[in-house]
Length: 252
Image (tube, rainbow, N blue to C red; front, side):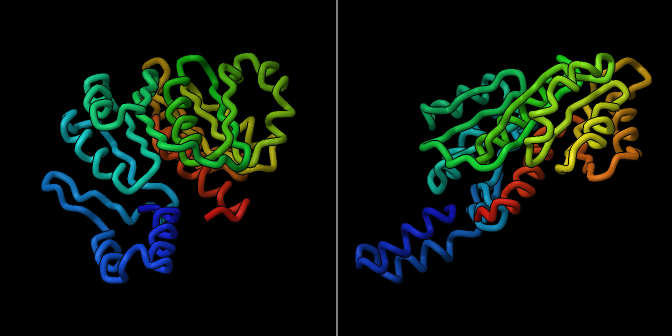
């Protein structure tokens, strides 16, 4: 149950359409729902501004679908990450309007479009970083942010980034996904006043160590105002950007 559902329920009590006892029962049962293999956290939308997100890796298609069904009973929006096509097919049976984003493996469901706020810019150093960037963009969009994505503007051809000055300066927050040396985050961080969320990706040759090299480079950036999330964690970057922009605009 998100804030809108709670307000609707309280309005129903006020209008006499729902008894206080029934409303209290719903609120008491709100924190989580135990379905044996998962304890579905229905209270997360109140705490963090968006319902529990399903991390699909390691789960069966049936488990993913069951969790999705429980969440959708109390929320208008849903996000599942790192899903495969079998998981998507299972979710599609409980939510016909489910959409699949094949590059990132994200599943999104919107019963009605969310009102979008802010300006989030998602950049990639190269084309190979796009799957991680898509996870970030999809996450941010369904959480309620206006998202613009610009791909392949890494430091190997810095003129490509410099052509995007207007977009860089106009963003409330910028997510940078980069593998190899991870240098794009430092360059962007030194050019803008807005916060930068850096995502090291597991793209690169052997000495990149599956994303460890760009992770360390981003953590050691001399540019200020850069936060760094885990390797390939596009979701985490978007969740951070959502909190930053939501706070700026005073959104609930």
